[in-house]
Image (cartoon, rainbow, N blue to C red; front, side, top):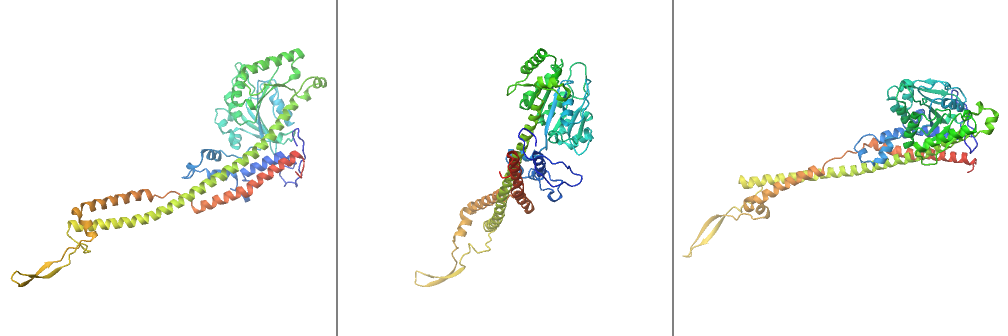
Amino acid sequence: RHGAATGHVEEFAMPKKGHDERTRPVTEQILVDAARIYDAREDEDTESKDLKTYAAFLSKEDAFTKHLPKDLLDRARNMRPPRDRITCLLIGNHSAGKSSFTNWYVGEKIQNESVAIETAGITIVRRGKGRVTWKGPQTINAFPHMETLGQMEGVTDFLTTEFSTSTEKNFPLVEFIDTPGLTDGTLKYPFDVDKAITELAEHATMIMVFLDPIGKALVSRCMNVVEKLAVEHSAKMSYYLTKFDTAGDEVDRTNVVSQIVQELQGRVRATHALKLHTMFLPERATEEVRKNLPNKIGELCQNISREIDSRVQDVLDGLSKDCSCLSKIVDEKVARNRKCVTHNTFSVVWKVVISLLTLAVIGALTYWTALNHADLDPLKLCANDGQKVVTVQQPDGSSIQEVKDGATDSNIYCLGLRASNGVPCGVGLVAALVWLMYLWVTKTKQTEQLSAEDVKKLREMQAHINETIIKKHKALKKRLTEDALDDQLS
């Protein structure tokens, strides 16, 4: 168990052949398990049942996606498996001891150490299953967050990843990025070092500034980079005066510390009190030096341990928020789909009603035309009663019979169709037809809705998040709590 709060280490069954046979600390187990929740490609039975796949499905472009809240959509699109270790970016002037510290922490000579400029490129040092070296293209391909770095001219040719099997200290949970020593003068770097360091700082958990006490700490190029990084990453930065055992007597050491602190205070606007920690590698110092000089290298290791603890908590917190985000997106899509289904159902009803009304109006308009302009009355709406024989009394008392046409039917249909030569009725029928066309356009438009298969997938997705992933998250939090309290009954 790493860090100041030492706890128990859980025992596990022997791993399968070919797997890491050491017993992993609880924090490492949690980070690995959390990463698998996001990306379960190693588990055949859970293929495509992970947060990464769910986020890609839920954030794909469709008619529903554009209506999602922007914060949820951005979180889903940017959802990535959490890195299973913290990243420590080492920067500083030439010969400041960055490579020496990395070798000391790992417990193995990974980087060359020399007064000459040995680190001309960027080296990532991390734990692996074997002692392997990757070149730039493989490094960029394996670590997606390095993609922007790989696009910088010249960087890929001077980028390597060194894997070590060491389990010293907390190395399995730490990734060191060793950068070229910064110097003034005529030295030309094979790529834009300042720009590369700025990009790496975006993804670093800790930024360690190593400064050499022997006249090189205050080189302008190093201080300029430090000043630029402090604008955005001040909270992640810490400052170390390395090789403090070689800084001369007490007066010389005091002067060196004062000069560097004064320079840093003039350039760095820290959100907290600026501290310059003195350190040296204990194995390279005499017994007297180890007793008399303050050495903060142990405190640096404790800071790394605390960052690991914080990283675990951040990962679990992020996992909870990501589950909530995806669950809300599913709810949003299902609710919107329900509205779309209702809308489409009503649009079908409107189609039927408008179609029937349109046929009725067209029929009435046709009959109006025949009645008013062709003098045709197929339905006899305006027909008279036919001819009738009427007896008419004459003044002389005689009577005669006359044949007269019957009275024309004056029902409401006839009056409506023929009133004022039929003009009002014709205008009304045309207006009704136009209104029905407007209703057809506005009421019968179908909206895109999810297929039954997509709805089923959303339901299964939400059930898996709520019933499986959230339970795993709770189990990981419980494991972390029990490990911190060293109490299996907590």
